[in-house]
Image (tube, helix red, strand yellow):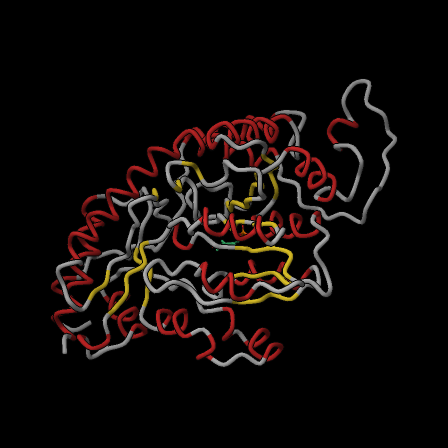
Length: 393
Ligand SMILES: *Cc1c(COP(=O)(O)O)cnc(C)c1O
């Protein structure tokens, strides 16, 4: 480490996004392990009910990942070969992988330059008679232009499946993401705003979710745990070749505790994001994330963009410099179209989605989680400003 680095560096490494698990989660998991039911059962049912109540969802189905939720939604809509699904290149690969899983064609359209969310005008232009669904991602936790996309979906008689992996809790015009009847997929992966280690939730119309519940458990016509209840029958029918996507009661035990802390977690995320923005918006080398007036941001990610004209270093070196100063960061996301599988299968060039690609090259995600102390936050701010000062053009 050089002297300039040592002066401003914190002593221990600040991880990018550790989970925040308390004694209550531990107690609830142990309680489950001591109970006669450890896989999908009463706690999962309660988790679904409390999650739906928290968001005002018509219904909720707990699954073992957000990926599973999106896959099962596509399968229940019978989307497959010959069909097209419109989504964004600036997402985690799972959003697009599930479209491949059902044999449909992912149609990528570029993002808006400010929010980095899918651009509704480009979605409209990409609609064809083969389009069956739109899969927007609430990037970083900033809601997409939901009303515009919803109207577009209705007008074209296609389904909007929302990838809400980042959007808990987020609101569009005061309405929670996940409160509507279309399928919405949440993630409870270890780094997400609410975690069950691995897990997910599909919200939407209860009748649709009944079908999804069957598809998510082997295509069996009744829940396994009801089968083993007193008076339950051993008999079941396989009505479709379903998946194995159910969430365990061990995971739901964690989720029930996390759900109670969600508002507190969210308030802390908002405070941290506000502190970062106040520190960075005055520096011409830095571009803090935007928040449109009519949305409530979930602040899953704090995506900082660098302004290349003001710096002598690029994003990759900026990340290295922060790491030297003991600040962990990440990059969300390597655009889908530059990954070899998608690049080669569809013949994409980097410039095919110029907004997504040019922003990918200059963005990084700073630590943002409710476990950060005020000292941690000011360490991140100091480190970022120190890197900027050292490498200003
Ligand atoms: C994390 C994430 C997923 C996948 O979530 P899992 O629960 O790990 O399947 C999907 N989409 C986005 C945008 C994500 O960030």
